[in-house]
Length: 253
Image (cartoon, rainbow, N blue to C red; front, side, top):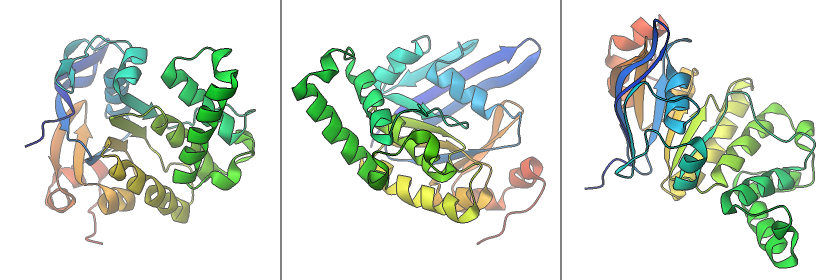
């Protein structure tokens, strides 16, 4: 039986008297897609920031592939295989889509700006960058500046950059926010087969319940810094926690 790829044990992050993450036990298996839901201010993004090294935890442990990475830097965690995207896309707007992916690849390989411009390295980087764009349905945008993309494709490019780091664990903060309903499904139908094909453990913070219940293997309900419920979509649909957190019932559709 496979072991959790990422696990937190009693993870804590406080801001003064505010217990943003309050003793959270969480785990995710290889290839699993977990949706984390909860109201604004529940601590979801703070949890991701603590796991990825943007915040130093105030207590507890973070284990990655059996290794204690609680106090590892975010750069170290990226190199180990923990990557993330942001709610607000984090692109190089004045670079082309291809060059945005190249930047991620160069960062992954720890190449200097001089080295990656050699003919051999440039060719390999460009080839992998094009393959990544193709995987995320952006091949036709190769030479388009990032700032010229519509919001849905900006989201895809941001996720593609995280994917280019070859993560084992991918944490996505609201990957469908700010786009039209049809585009939300286009984004998910693009990224899910890609991450599943590489068995990347993926945690998604998401507020759109239609997206959550359609694509998640498991749902975690976050409330006031704690996980108050978790289970399959069918299990969560039947729990009282969903109404406590969202204030409404969830249909079976």
